[in-house]
Length: 113
Length: 112
Image (tube, rainbow over all chains, first blue to last red):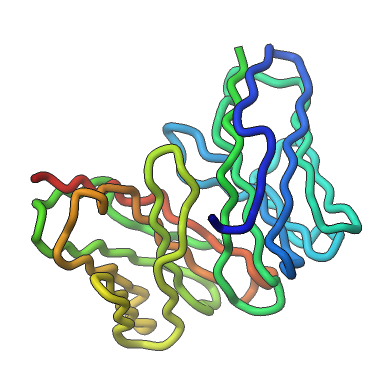
Protein backbone atom coordinates (compact mmCIF):
# COMPACT_ATOMS: atom_id res chain seq x y z
CA UNK A 1 0.00 0.00 0.00
CA UNK A 2 1.60 3.25 -1.20
CA UNK A 3 -0.50 5.48 1.03
CA UNK A 4 -2.04 7.22 -1.99
CA UNK A 5 -5.77 6.66 -2.38
CA UNK A 6 -7.89 7.07 -5.46
CA UNK A 7 -11.62 6.87 -5.95
CA UNK A 8 -13.50 5.43 -7.65
CA UNK A 9 -11.66 2.26 -8.62
CA UNK A 10 -13.79 1.72 -11.69
CA UNK A 11 -15.98 4.09 -13.67
CA UNK A 12 -18.17 3.32 -16.66
CA UNK A 13 -19.85 6.18 -18.44
CA UNK A 14 -21.13 7.24 -21.83
CA UNK A 15 -19.61 9.48 -24.45
CA UNK A 16 -20.26 13.15 -23.88
CA UNK A 17 -20.46 12.80 -20.12
CA UNK A 18 -18.33 14.36 -17.43
CA UNK A 19 -16.58 12.57 -14.55
CA UNK A 20 -14.45 13.51 -11.57
CA UNK A 21 -11.60 11.39 -10.29
CA UNK A 22 -10.33 11.94 -6.78
CA UNK A 23 -6.91 11.46 -5.23
CA UNK A 24 -5.57 11.79 -1.69
CA UNK A 25 -1.77 11.97 -1.48
CA UNK A 26 0.43 10.31 1.12
CA UNK A 27 0.56 12.08 4.43
CA UNK A 28 3.16 14.85 4.21
CA UNK A 29 3.40 14.92 0.41
CA UNK A 30 2.71 18.27 -1.16
CA UNK A 31 3.00 17.35 -4.82
CA UNK A 32 0.36 15.48 -6.80
CA UNK A 33 0.74 14.18 -10.35
CA UNK A 34 -1.88 12.81 -12.72
CA UNK A 35 -1.09 10.27 -15.43
CA UNK A 36 -3.10 8.55 -18.13
CA UNK A 37 -2.22 5.05 -19.28
CA UNK A 38 -3.95 3.51 -22.30
CA UNK A 39 -3.36 -0.01 -23.58
CA UNK A 40 -1.30 1.17 -26.52
CA UNK A 41 0.44 4.03 -24.76
CA UNK A 42 2.92 4.34 -21.95
CA UNK A 43 2.40 6.41 -18.86
CA UNK A 44 1.39 9.85 -20.12
CA UNK A 45 1.96 12.73 -17.73
CA UNK A 46 -1.02 15.05 -17.53
CA UNK A 47 -0.44 17.64 -14.84
CA UNK A 48 1.38 18.36 -11.56
CA UNK A 49 0.27 20.37 -8.54
CA UNK A 50 2.36 21.50 -5.62
CA UNK A 51 0.72 22.79 -2.45
CA UNK A 52 -2.37 23.90 -4.31
CA UNK A 53 -0.71 25.46 -7.31
CA UNK A 54 -0.26 24.10 -10.80
CA UNK A 55 3.42 23.35 -11.42
CA UNK A 56 3.66 21.58 -14.75
CA UNK A 57 1.42 20.61 -17.61
CA UNK A 58 1.96 17.67 -19.90
CA UNK A 59 -0.25 16.16 -22.56
CA UNK A 60 -3.50 17.26 -20.95
CA UNK A 61 -6.44 17.93 -23.24
CA UNK A 62 -8.45 21.12 -22.93
CA UNK A 63 -11.47 18.98 -22.01
CA UNK A 64 -9.57 17.89 -18.89
CA UNK A 65 -8.89 20.01 -15.85
CA UNK A 66 -7.57 19.46 -12.37
CA UNK A 67 -7.14 21.19 -9.08
CA UNK A 68 -5.54 20.62 -5.70
CA UNK A 69 -7.44 21.71 -2.63
CA UNK A 70 -6.17 23.21 0.63
CA UNK A 71 -6.26 19.79 2.29
CA UNK A 72 -3.98 18.65 -0.59
CA UNK A 73 -6.36 16.19 -2.14
CA UNK A 74 -6.74 16.58 -5.87
CA UNK A 75 -9.46 16.07 -8.45
CA UNK A 76 -9.18 15.43 -12.16
CA UNK A 77 -12.22 16.46 -14.17
CA UNK A 78 -12.79 14.90 -17.58
CA UNK A 79 -15.57 16.33 -19.72
CA UNK A 80 -17.14 15.69 -23.13
CA UNK A 81 -15.80 12.19 -22.84
CA UNK A 82 -14.81 10.27 -25.95
CA UNK A 83 -14.19 6.57 -26.48
CA UNK A 84 -10.48 7.27 -26.66
CA UNK A 85 -10.48 8.58 -23.10
CA UNK A 86 -10.93 5.04 -21.83
CA UNK A 87 -7.78 4.37 -19.82
CA UNK A 88 -6.26 3.87 -16.42
CA UNK A 89 -5.78 7.16 -14.62
CA UNK A 90 -3.11 7.21 -11.95
CA UNK A 91 -2.44 9.75 -9.30
CA UNK A 92 0.99 9.89 -7.69
CA UNK A 93 2.42 11.97 -4.89
CA UNK A 94 5.83 13.02 -3.65
CA UNK A 95 7.22 15.57 -1.24
CA UNK A 96 7.91 17.79 -4.27
CA UNK A 97 10.78 19.42 -2.45
CA UNK A 98 13.57 17.44 -4.01
CA UNK A 99 14.09 14.70 -6.49
CA UNK A 100 12.31 11.88 -4.73
CA UNK A 101 10.31 8.92 -5.87
CA UNK A 102 6.68 9.22 -6.72
CA UNK A 103 4.22 6.95 -4.96
CA UNK A 104 1.35 5.84 -7.14
CA UNK A 105 -2.24 5.24 -6.19
CA UNK A 106 -4.10 2.13 -7.36
CA UNK A 107 -5.62 3.99 -10.30
CA UNK A 108 -9.10 4.58 -11.63
CA UNK A 109 -10.12 2.51 -14.63
CA UNK A 110 -12.36 4.63 -16.83
CA UNK A 111 -14.43 2.98 -19.53
CA UNK A 112 -16.31 5.22 -21.94
CA UNK A 113 -19.03 3.44 -23.93
CA UNK B 1 12.61 17.66 -24.77
CA UNK B 2 13.42 14.25 -23.37
CA UNK B 3 13.93 11.09 -25.35
CA UNK B 4 13.86 7.83 -23.40
CA UNK B 5 14.31 4.52 -25.16
CA UNK B 6 13.94 0.99 -23.82
CA UNK B 7 13.13 -2.34 -25.46
CA UNK B 8 9.45 -3.12 -25.80
CA UNK B 9 9.60 -6.75 -24.74
CA UNK B 10 11.99 -9.27 -23.21
CA UNK B 11 11.68 -12.86 -22.14
CA UNK B 12 13.74 -14.98 -19.77
CA UNK B 13 13.47 -18.19 -17.79
CA UNK B 14 13.04 -18.68 -14.09
CA UNK B 15 16.33 -18.51 -12.19
CA UNK B 16 18.11 -16.63 -14.96
CA UNK B 17 19.52 -13.09 -15.04
CA UNK B 18 18.09 -10.40 -17.30
CA UNK B 19 19.34 -6.90 -18.09
CA UNK B 20 16.90 -4.22 -19.21
CA UNK B 21 18.54 -1.26 -20.90
CA UNK B 22 17.44 2.34 -21.02
CA UNK B 23 19.00 5.17 -23.00
CA UNK B 24 18.02 8.76 -22.60
CA UNK B 25 18.67 12.20 -23.98
CA UNK B 26 17.82 15.17 -21.81
CA UNK B 27 18.90 18.78 -21.73
CA UNK B 28 19.87 18.55 -18.06
CA UNK B 29 19.96 15.10 -16.49
CA UNK B 30 19.27 15.06 -12.79
CA UNK B 31 18.50 11.47 -11.83
CA UNK B 32 17.03 8.24 -13.15
CA UNK B 33 14.35 6.01 -11.63
CA UNK B 34 13.20 2.47 -12.31
CA UNK B 35 9.66 1.38 -11.60
CA UNK B 36 7.95 -2.00 -11.81
CA UNK B 37 4.37 -2.25 -12.96
CA UNK B 38 2.26 -5.40 -12.97
CA UNK B 39 -0.61 -5.47 -15.43
CA UNK B 40 -3.50 -3.29 -14.29
CA UNK B 41 -1.67 -2.19 -11.14
CA UNK B 42 0.18 0.91 -10.03
CA UNK B 43 3.88 1.40 -10.77
CA UNK B 44 6.06 0.78 -7.74
CA UNK B 45 9.48 2.31 -7.12
CA UNK B 46 12.50 0.04 -7.55
CA UNK B 47 15.63 2.21 -7.66
CA UNK B 48 17.13 5.64 -8.10
CA UNK B 49 20.53 6.57 -9.58
CA UNK B 50 22.01 10.03 -9.80
CA UNK B 51 25.73 9.22 -9.77
CA UNK B 52 27.59 6.86 -12.08
CA UNK B 53 27.84 3.31 -10.91
CA UNK B 54 25.88 0.39 -9.63
CA UNK B 55 23.21 0.44 -6.94
CA UNK B 56 22.34 -2.98 -5.55
CA UNK B 57 19.14 -3.86 -3.76
CA UNK B 58 18.70 -7.56 -3.20
CA UNK B 59 17.97 -9.33 -6.47
CA UNK B 60 17.69 -6.01 -8.33
CA UNK B 61 20.55 -3.71 -9.30
CA UNK B 62 20.58 -0.55 -11.35
CA UNK B 63 23.51 0.97 -13.19
CA UNK B 64 24.01 4.47 -14.54
CA UNK B 65 26.49 6.05 -16.93
CA UNK B 66 25.77 9.75 -17.23
CA UNK B 67 28.35 10.33 -19.95
CA UNK B 68 26.71 7.69 -22.15
CA UNK B 69 23.11 8.55 -21.25
CA UNK B 70 22.62 4.92 -20.34
CA UNK B 71 21.17 2.87 -17.52
CA UNK B 72 20.28 -0.74 -16.99
CA UNK B 73 18.22 -2.69 -14.51
CA UNK B 74 19.62 -6.11 -13.65
CA UNK B 75 17.30 -8.75 -12.26
CA UNK B 76 18.89 -11.88 -10.82
CA UNK B 77 17.41 -15.23 -9.84
CA UNK B 78 14.30 -14.47 -11.82
CA UNK B 79 10.97 -15.54 -10.40
CA UNK B 80 7.61 -15.87 -12.11
CA UNK B 81 6.35 -12.87 -10.12
CA UNK B 82 8.97 -10.69 -11.84
CA UNK B 83 6.86 -10.83 -15.00
CA UNK B 84 5.86 -7.18 -15.31
CA UNK B 85 6.56 -3.99 -17.17
CA UNK B 86 9.70 -2.10 -16.13
CA UNK B 87 9.63 1.66 -16.58
CA UNK B 88 12.67 3.89 -16.86
CA UNK B 89 12.08 7.52 -15.84
CA UNK B 90 14.39 10.52 -15.80
CA UNK B 91 14.35 13.80 -13.99
CA UNK B 92 15.47 16.79 -16.00
CA UNK B 93 17.07 19.76 -14.30
CA UNK B 94 15.01 22.08 -16.44
CA UNK B 95 11.72 20.57 -15.35
CA UNK B 96 9.76 21.33 -12.25
CA UNK B 97 10.84 19.70 -9.03
CA UNK B 98 9.57 16.16 -8.96
CA UNK B 99 8.37 15.84 -12.54
CA UNK B 100 9.60 12.65 -14.21
CA UNK B 101 9.70 11.66 -17.86
CA UNK B 102 8.78 8.00 -18.33
CA UNK B 103 9.82 5.62 -21.08
CA UNK B 104 7.19 3.36 -22.61
CA UNK B 105 8.27 0.41 -20.50
CA UNK B 106 9.78 -3.01 -21.14
CA UNK B 107 7.39 -5.93 -20.78
CA UNK B 108 9.31 -8.81 -19.19
CA UNK B 109 7.90 -12.31 -19.35
CA UNK B 110 9.48 -14.96 -17.15
CA UNK B 111 8.91 -18.55 -18.26
CA UNK B 112 9.12 -21.59 -15.97
